[in-house]
Image (cartoon, rainbow, N blue to C red; front, side, top):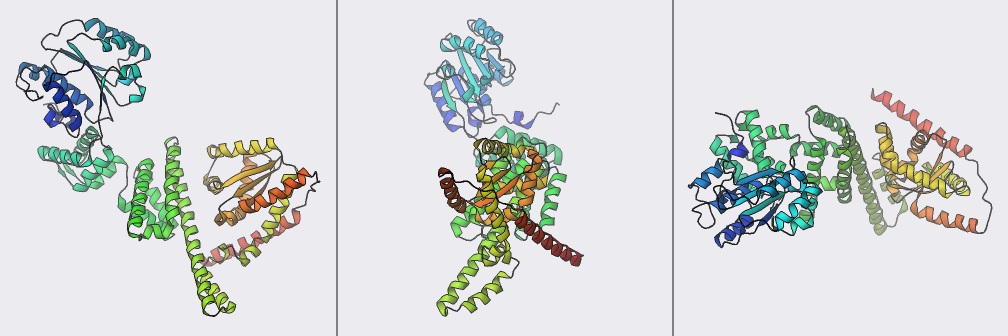
Length: 554
């Protein structure tokens, strides 16, 4: 005997067997009972929710010789012919492959013919939105005033593509996604009938993957049954659908919290080796983060949210959502996924610095209240800052460290504004908008991600002024100043100076220079070589110290 796919084998043949469309079913049954049949129906809804199945059941029930309470008897000759797909008075047409004017003209030529066996001749046109404009126009008159013995049932997943002139001539029925609990019951029923052993978490994952489409759920069950030989667990589902388990997502974020970078990217490589779909992984991570945020809102306690920060979690969700569209259009989705991991690590570090800063401020406040002793405050401050975070705070030592950068920025701001012009600004804005599609490697991507928080405010033929409202990354921008310059120089193929300011300081400086320009004061160009050499010298010393540490580590 030829094997029949499960979704065909368990397709409903009566209204009572239909799953999850009670409103549609009850309305159609009442219309049959009260003999209030329309000449045209339009079934609208997602794929796999029962549109075509209900159209067939409706067509059979209308013509049933002994229907009772709006249900077919399943015993008469008409019902038997319908169940065997032998009723010539029920004509099914797939508009996806028969979408031309000629096919609709053929319908128009045959509608006047009386049914052969049945009371009504019924045309079921599936995926009706695929009809051409000419075909819709040809159908219009026939649909509006068909012969009394003809009923049209149209089905579509994309109602926005169906002309309003067609929609207004039909009774419209909206099909909903099948609820998860009903899908679960149906899958369990099929598994019992087919002697398939399946775990509850595997059923749940099948329901999630099917997104409310029962046909998709049964189709996936059929595929899993063939793969596992009738013994299905969650790992089997994840292997076939390209997703990862919640345990793997937890493991990924544990590596982030522990700053275990090697294990983190080893896990990402493992996803690739296992053939996982990074689109699905991102979707599942978004859902996981959302659930953690809800848990935090309910209980005010959540380890993940506390470690990375509530606002950072929200930003990460938006980042994943933004990158999903880029991933769908990219051949190498793993690059984008790894970049997202780098970004999350930066969020984590930012949160750690914020927590440590808060501790310091609280400690200072406590000491001030006790004895207002500056010495005690400084001693306690030094004790806390010592955890490798010292240089990251915007304090006096940080100002000392970056004083040459600030001096360089003042010089460059002066020089760029002295020669700023609108054309250069527009060119740089266009360049930055197109930059993301012109990146060649991960290093360039990292620099680009850093620039996402920056805005180009002004430009001259050989300089750009960037500003940021995020003071947390201002010093990171200073640290990567030469890498940022290299990126712009390589892509624009010309020498360029980058000037970086925080927004508040930029507004102050801008007003000063606007006044100078209004008063037609001459802005003298300044030499930056001396301060630039000092910065390069300090970076060289820092690199040497770091190299020494690496040697010690070896």
